[in-house]
Length: 124
Image 1 (spheres, rainbow, N blue to C red):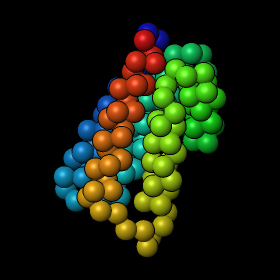
Image 2: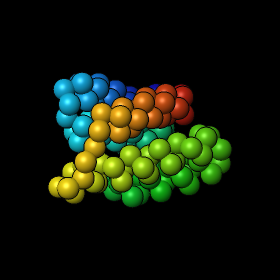
Image 3: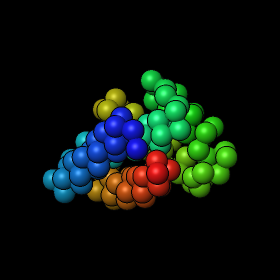
Image 4: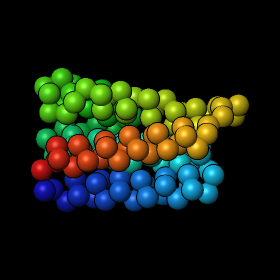
């Protein structure tokens, strides 16, 4: 496995652990953002393992759909997980009136765990 792929997977795992700590402490906005970034780095790793690189969030999400979902390498539901986590991250970072519960954060974290597992498999 390429070193860059390993580094992105490692960063994804670190961010997922941070999301769990933030959620436990009641910092739901931060937990959602960190869980999304765990998914972002997992996606980046899975794409890099196939020689595909993108630099923007939209580029990564689009390439994930095009190169991993459409061909059937990863089940379709995971594209939705990534898109919804991205939208929640945008709201958590930029919408001051957005309210998130512990359940909201836990849902994104649980989906990020599943997501990282399929990304790890896609990298091998």
